[in-house]
Length: 176
Image 1: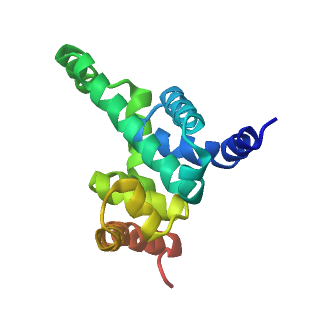
Image 2: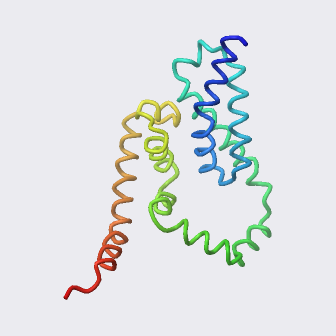
């Protein structure tokens, strides 16, 4: 096995799961997420190691993000208005229950933020990236990344504060 092949295998072993999780958040589908991650690693195989190795994390997440967004753009026109209207008009009971569960708690609140804030927060806290790395992935300035994370967290705190207060008061019960 060549050194580059071993490096690719090590990269897959290390980053496949975090990339799938990130792709799943963008695409909302496990199979699509795996396809996009596979495409990302195929693109890595075509890159000269010396050009990518020093910024591998940023490169992988950047490529994955672009591939996932391109896939969303291509698939959006394929869905018909009639299909969209049917799913919106009569969601299945299980779908409604799932939506209610997703809308509760932190992930539900996170999903209500603008896409750029969601991306920055997820990359920071789920992937452990620095502001500089997030800047490289998203194409935003480091200052803008910091601003988006700060604003997003402030918004999440404000939205979750009433839930935390009602949970605390409900669990403590009436005081004698």
